[in-house]
Length: 156
Picture 1: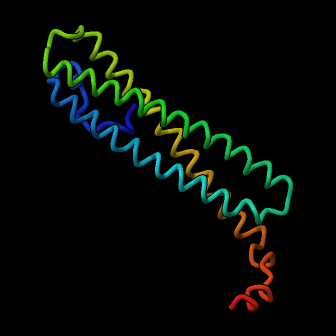
Picture 2: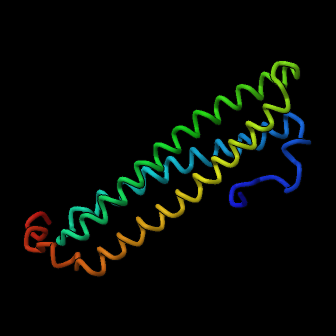
């Protein structure tokens, strides 16, 4: 778990005050919202180039990547919900420090951080696959040969 932290290493989660954990969690939420936008872009990218694929094996590969991207999208949505709920708990703890069991809450915070780190690994892997396949399609599927320039001239 080393790709997602906005905090010092060691025992930060166990020693930080509620406001510090709130700021950290707000960073996570901001990143998850950014990833949601990036996932939408990746879906659009796949949709745009999927039309130009001629070979069945390439279609199968793109479909596999799209399924993985849908899973990453779902994972992002679930993490965003968990993060929002976690922020609500943090707000309650800031208002009333005895509202929840602090030890249990901090363990829950660590678990959320681990889940975010796992998500980030999946997201990066999937993003790389999307860019690789679109680059491959552009290079190997000879995108330009699919374009009928005579039709384009009629619209000009």
